[in-house]
Length: 414
Ligand SMILES: [Zn+2]
Image (tube, rainbow, N blue to C red; front, side):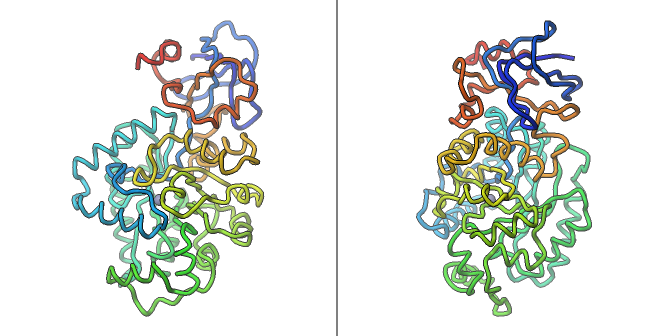
């Protein structure tokens, strides 16, 4: 057993502890408390907290970092992504794999210990396992005009079953892309698969752009044009005539086992619905701005009691996968939300949403010891608020390292 003492411990499950300690044994948290422990390794001026949770990213798009410029309109950005992806037709292109691996390392170096990774190809599964980065990988399906949605899901499930390890730290489940790219029947087939796999959770992009709102309300606009251009528009599809979140609610797709990603366009009724369903909204503030959909109504999410998690989204729409930067963006957008709530979103809420709430997201006895120490500049009056200031990787040390104390004292030596 090893015990670390720190100026601050942030259990997330309870109040911040000044002059606290945490004990680790066999990779698990054996205890946490306050007060002197002569047997502890003193890490000094740091705050120990659970590793952050990036609840939404697309690691397989990491090679597109900087390749698609920021847009004023989401359709322009997504068009750029589609064009850029076409330049790499082979899913196992070394460029793709190397960039994804580098992003995994970057995530860990900046204090992320669990990711929700959306993948159309599943190439990230072995990379995450090799890097020992726990993850829920969402095998994302698209199909607006699919002949056999049940068959499509059956094939996807068979592929998942060949590589999934339900007890491991990298677990795979199925997820639909978005209301404008997935047919009703495909949504239903994916939901049926989710109902048949009790440990799974799913995810869907919803309420991201105003174009999506128009398309689901009236069947018109940029999405209709894009689907027509792609040759997948079908006259059998009728516009639901409601908001995207209400559409997915009416379909029976959303509940507490589904992450609703973005929700930028959600109104009060949508948020009330998501609150009632127990659905976690995953907000990606930096990406939302980059891709031209505007800022998420973060303060309304919290005011309505909606569960909120955070994600960086893909490197095609954000500069890095540092969740501390995402938290800093959230703080700018939502100055009235407490630091504690924002930090809980970036840890425990994300872990729960990804189906890992029993293992990660807080410092509690028995949980996996995925813990980080963030170096403080000296005494800070509000340690929670300090963690929203945009912490750089150089200030982050993992406690599972061989000698975290020397790492904290010599941060440039890494
Ligand atoms: Zn996404």
